[in-house]
Length: 365
Image (tube, rainbow, N blue to C red; front, side, top):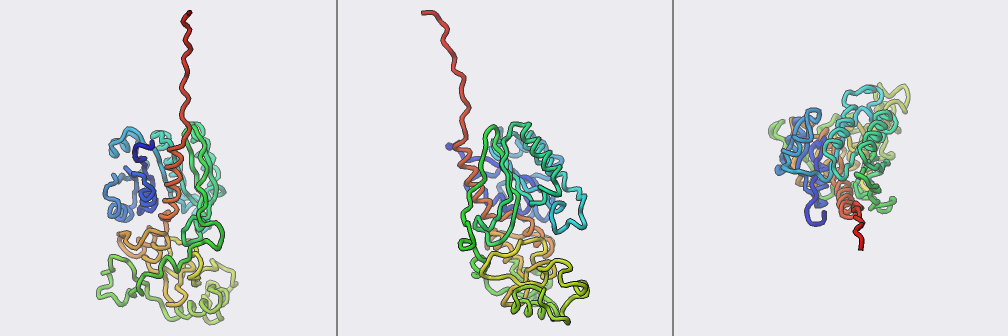
């Protein structure tokens, strides 16, 4: 294994954050699968050398190996859609049809037989998706994989964001520990400021010459109404939350109780700490604590991409601002993927060798 670059397949690749991190770690991603048209466009723009396949439900190991021109895949990684297990959608999506895609990941692992597989998902898979998770664990064990999993805080791996994720790693016939934290404890966490401070002040959508002519950087902020601006200004002066809003700025849907709904909406983030979890609503202050504390505006897509550690030059493609934000919010942070990728490479190099049977010489002397 030390004489060649490990080969990986990225299932449910999205815009390619996991692929980018694996490549940073020295892993060659030879194939990926993604069904969303806009996410495919972003992935292809950044990883043109990777064979991009479609619907995982229609994929078979032979198809993947032929596309990748490989006989053997060392690593299979995947981030199956997690909305059905997320606490943010618990009230509305108790039976999301995408939940079962976790088992498609299992199927392809069993067909491809990689040396290592890694899966990332929301912590809710352990609770709301407990039966599916057990089926996944049982299936991996039956296929000869030894599994390690836990919920990790990605801020402790150098990501400027509080983002708890379930991470599962399995070795074919050998145990693999989870990666070691690189930024353990608040004093070592990376702040939002360090992630976005070098970006120039963004344009507003209303300032564009043509409403749909968004710059390739996607460093453009939504325009907000005066009442929203006042809410952000008040939140910035009072701890960053909407909980302290005066009566005239409280929305009707929140009037029955200050604790009604999600408390982070119309809040502002702290530049000197990691951000809240970047979600598909990351450029809309009505969907989370995504207000800038000094410029009284929402995050721009590029700022969200920087917080997801994708990088300033990572190309973003899509049908509009909502699509771009959704792709960014669904991504696995590139920084964590790099740390995990390096860990997997070390495990491949150090994996136990199969013991060779020693033939006994039975000849008489």
